[in-house]
Length: 418
Image: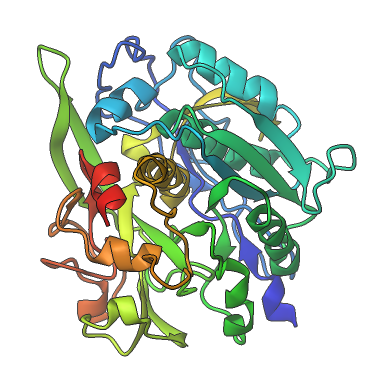
């Protein structure tokens, strides 16, 4: 079906600062960057192919302008700053995070090493790159846009859970069939407890429920970005067996002692969210006032103005190096890291990892998340994500822009206690 092909990598919103900020490696919180206009340099097109809708800030208000790529010290939040903000107890030790993307990112191993060197991070215990069927020698063709997405996903999953192993599974192409094949492979690999996915459709797909089972896993949980175009969000984020991550604007502050805290956090207008057309309401959302599955479940910083430092040496649109990136793509791999940290603590307590579908006597991941009484902060201020009335409006409690809220110190411990 043609509709199955309307998939894009979502969340890869890119902006870069016009000036270089002071070193972030020591935990300094960057000032708000002042980029130029944000442009759709590769928007979704009506040609039946998959496209990577990157947004880049530029010097000039023209679609041919060169992206502002920082030189020297990178702009954007650093792993040190985010580590202090999250206050995680776990490091992901003993866990493996699988990251599913499309096409080949030819420089990702070297880019991760550069990222680690900049921020004083040790290399992951294991980093393996394979095709959707597990081949290490027959990889898909390279694609610069997806390579930039892959750098964001790999580097920030590692930043949040530095002791977790990483498995990058590269789909042959950006169709749902190929990407689901990659998920199926990842879900069968020993040690994989969470699968990060920063891609999805532009809206929902007729017949999407027939694909839900790819993430109905008993030993792992799929995490999906909810989208960067506001309401209605995209599939597979609507899949009831996944954790859907929406977006916020997060401003962190650093005290004179170096402690990092939340100065403010509000909903981000690009956060994908809404009520599904096709998916029935899952039991874990039974207390919500919506007839069907609603997304997102949780949120994370997504505003490119408060984005994250990412290194990519595969030239994109004529530029390479350090970028400042945002979008819900940034939230999916970082939530995957949070879950890996929580699963490390659960294993230490002789508990099963948080999976999408569990056996008798264990707790499904969604049930644990929706039962949390700590580790999440409700987001009740900010922008709407569309013009659909209350569904697109921010509110106290759960809403279809930020879900249950954003992580706070103790989130991994809270999830380990579920």
